[in-house]
Length: 357
Ligand code: FE
Image (cartoon, rainbow, N blue to C red; front, side, top):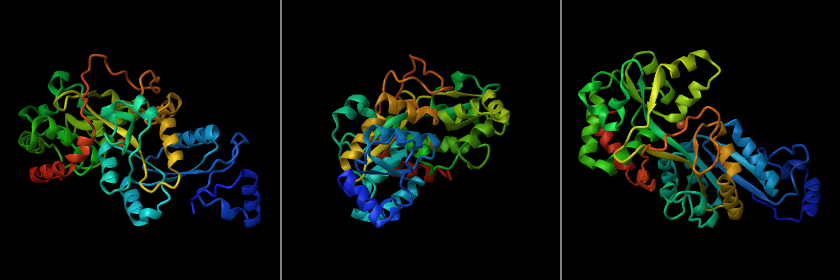
């Protein structure tokens, strides 16, 4: 029902009025806005695991530039994955958008993505931030960090993730569950950098240092550190930035009491991405590639990170309001992010054996 009719615009509109509007505009068809949208050049169906108001602005801007009508379906990544598996080759999905390279790997592993070779994407996005075969492309950067209590911890004590396994943090670590994709991806890099045995030792050490049982999301971990339940926790950088820029004073106080260490996961700060892929059976493949290229343009990049507080992957794009500059001398991991997927199964096994719920 999402498929483009590929009719000339005038004929298309005649057919639409003849068949009545409902037949031409499905439940998620975009509303006409302000007459800025050029003639209908077909459709693009996006399956997105993102949930930001700013994404609608991206879709509107893409429609205005191209005349391609965007239809977005937003849901959790796991649910989108199951939906696409059930739809099989009849899936209307053209583009998949989700956070974490480990998530995109799950779609790729299930045969739900396809290879894309685009000079525009290859030129804009550093090679380690995209799949080597073009199955997905990193579009915005995020860092998994150590959030720490500024009054109790010196930054030098948390400049590596390995620090968390030492006696220094006995009874002082908060964490979320190990099956969370951010924790799996972090472990995937630790396995790659240090080897399986050291990674298992690390997991055991961290579990032994838990102050409380793992629960909640990243924001809960930051709040727990601020409240004194533990001295350190794991959190993606943007959760802290959102608290620091929040309108609620309690959020800003939680950020004030804490700080982030862009800790090394073995060879620099642990980098991950929000990424996009072209679906394996995309009915509108060219539109899908055009959309990813739009997201990799300076304009698309700025819109993509404005609300999420991620970092643009394209050099020279201004940072969104409130996002801290990464120090020039910070060593950042240049691990090829497909490793995060390839080590994912082992990462979960290691956590399970260590007793990290
Ligand atoms: Fe997140």
